[in-house]
Length: 311
Ligand SMILES: Nc1nc2c(ncn2[C@@H]2O[C@H](COP(=O)(O)OP(=O)(O)O)[C@@H](O)[C@H]2O)c(=O)[nH]1
Ligand SMILES: [Mg+2]
Image 1: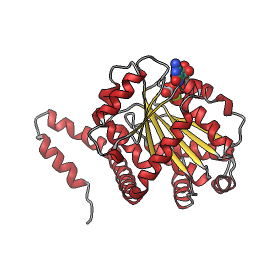
Image 2: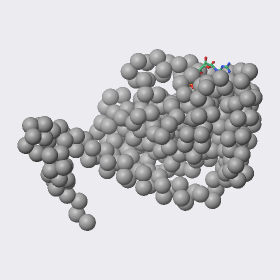
Image 3: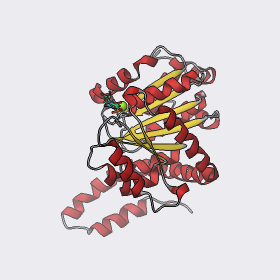
Image 4: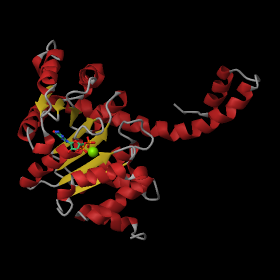
């Protein structure tokens, strides 16, 4: 396995060889030799995906459980499903990955389901470069549906909306901050709010509070709200209904979204290229500044003059 050549891996992506997809993911995620070629290949060979859904929410809110139930629906329709689970703690502790695997274990032997956990290395809770890269691999592999499970909600999460068709945010009743989270910007990223663990008594209250929060928005701008009990397979049909509605709403924005994605894609790659070089320069320049030989402004100017961008 260690010595599979790049052309073989690309052939594998083309023919739908899951073992070679796993290999490609490792290369891309670990940024080892062949990454650029694999990205070039996958970007230029994207196949049509019916749905790319981002599911985000706090740890333990039930994302994996919900995805497990959603997979059942896709599989009943004969659709091939790829899942990317982004968990910052995963490759290091192992615990979280194990959790996801167990939650989605019923699909382990199904050749139509491919699940991979990634660490969100480098990105603070948001969708990391690695996740975006793996998403391209999935797109070239030809899944009918791709689900991206990501942890955390907050500003850093806004980026995910550019890379998925529909974003669903999981809220759990009884967590005091649910409404706060809904108000604080998440409103802009969520196409759908899922109130999971609706078997809890506070669920109805949260539901009403959410509706009231969005009451002042025009009806077609109000996020969709769905109640689910993922562990009991309740509300899944309603969730798929909300996804359909969200898709219809999204249709006119396709071009805008593509532009945002391309912009984000180019800028973030350039930024990460310069960031690593920049931190070395900054560290070096701190010494004369701390000694009082230079002001921070002079130091910044000196670094900037080294990074020349020809117009
Ligand atoms: N009571 C209740 N428990 C749930 C529900 N959905 C998931 N759980 C449980 O919540 C825990 C965390 O679920 P998990 O899917 O791993 O959450 P994740 O970290 O968001 O992926 C597990 O013990 C699930 O069985 C639900 O709707 N109601
Ligand atoms: Mg999970």
